[in-house]
Amino acid sequence: MRVLVWVMAAFAALLGTPSLAQVTVIHAGSVIRDADGEPSGPATITIEDGRIVSIVDGLQTPGGEAQVIDLADKTVLPGLIDLHVHLTGDPGGDFWKEAVEPDEWGVVVGAKNARLTALAGFTTVREAGSGPETAFALRRGTAEGLIPGPRIVAAGVPLAIIGGHGDVNGFRPEVNELLDTGFTCTGPVECAAKVRLASQNGSDVIKITATGGVLSQQGRGLEAHFSDAEMKAIADTAHSLGLKVMAHAHGARGIEAASRAGIDTIEHGTYLDEAAARAMRENGTVLVPTLMAFQGVTERLGKGIYTPVVEDKIRAVADTARVFMGKALRWNVPIAFGTDAGVFAHGRNAGEFALMRAQGMTDRQALASATTVAAKVLEMDDQIGRLAPGYSADIIAVDGNPLEDVTVLEKVDFAMVRGRVIE
Image (cartoon, rainbow, N blue to C red):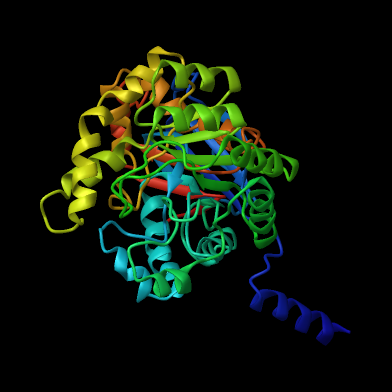
């Protein structure tokens, strides 16, 4: 019997199963529990099994064999949330790579970018479109701790109209057909079926391309791509399955139509006008402005990266991209944080804060957009977005006070996801 117990204990150790819960204690110089509060003085945060157990004033000496992390000269705050990333891709205009690179390569690229994203302080991301399985593989890898990276809420393949933004294009017809992933749809019935297919395949959220886009090869069509009936079918079906819908949308009428159909978030929103803003307010639709995407593509102009068609579209949208979020703010449209990382280099996500501030957001509003507001968009505000007992131990540390200068978040010195320290 004694030998059997020893063998079972050895087998458990081999599998990495701890006999006792791992306890970690963080000594913090200051703690911002959420964006509505103020920094505390020195405090002790106790973490067990990936969750916060307690936050108490002062630097307390733990008992037992707890791991102690010394951040006594840092400001500690909730991990940041980016609602629009593409971990499985890197910036560039080489659309033809879709025809030569296997989906598996996206997982390799995604593992690299997941690490960079977490090190940049983003402990939860919404993956806004990928290959059929790549983001789902990454989601599992970071959840199980096999890959260092953030919590991933994954959309999978976006739904698009045939020939629209998000559909394969730019190749010979027979190549377009071979590369088709099966998520285009025409008519409300087929669009509802594709939502169900995405849900069956593992999507956490439904992504649609509700209007044309800047980086696709068509030089036209920034207004609504789906019909009103198609978008309503998508929203209603997704909601019946407990899923939200995020819509890539640039043109004002496309934004308005998506909002009235019940779409939950508008990604980009470049040509937002008062009528579209009113529809967003009336329907509780949230804007995810992705200002870093516009900056990222502008930085790459004139370098032979994009095709002439795409370069023309980037130049046409550049001036509007510098002001539209400020208009949305004045029109009281709800705004949450998202960057479109992948259009620019991963790890630069926090550059979005300065761009938001330049268009009128306060430092506190900007921090909230990437914590409490973003957590509410994900319906995870009882788990992430603030530091409190029972919440996931998604914790970062910086120098300075981001409530007074949100750009200090561009240099994160410590990151923890689900209680796991990222390097």
